[in-house]
Amino acid sequence: GELLRREMENGADAAVIVPADPDAIASVLSSSAEVCPIVSMESPVEGASGTIFADTVQLGTELAQALLADWTSGRVLLLDSGGGVNHSITARLEAARSVLEDAGVPVAERACQWVMAFDAPATLRAAEGKELEQLSVPLYGVGSPVEIITRLEQGTISAVATWSDYAAGYLAVEHAVSAARGKDRATAPLSFSILRGEDIYEPNNQKML
Image (cartoon, rainbow, N blue to C red; front, side, top):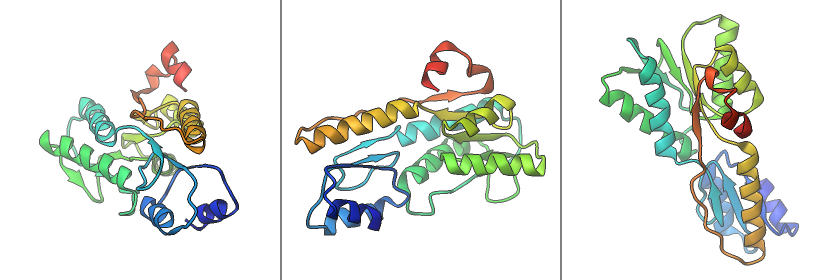
């Protein structure tokens, strides 16, 4: 929040952010005398000019459905990396929880046979922990960094909800420039795909990645 405040005070024409704490950013925007257009990525922020993010409920739902396609028995751990402040991550998690519970799949807080993560950092940490401990627990996550896609290809991650970071960044900058020029620009939910390792080399997925 303080970093954003400093950039605005230094005369930034617009800013593109990926907020860890959307409420803190919203507080900065509501309390600052001079506010430049803000475009938020991944999580909506009250007072921002626009948001570039995937539909949270749909993402959580489709990721849970990918797990259900593989599930035979056992409890599923939902990793809550939102910390109670990132509402997008929480919304993804709750959508997944609803799908799993409706299907009769038990959701665990600790010991489990399946794991789901709902943002890229949590997915990568879970994958690294799985490798370090040499665990066989299936892991489902979110993100498109090369470290995640590599582990998807290797089988460490069973499936991910992913999108084009290039397209997301391009849309965010395009929206920020329009806002800085005083032009309104509508934003639509960012398209995403559920990928498994065998899907990586399909031509359309190669373009996305």
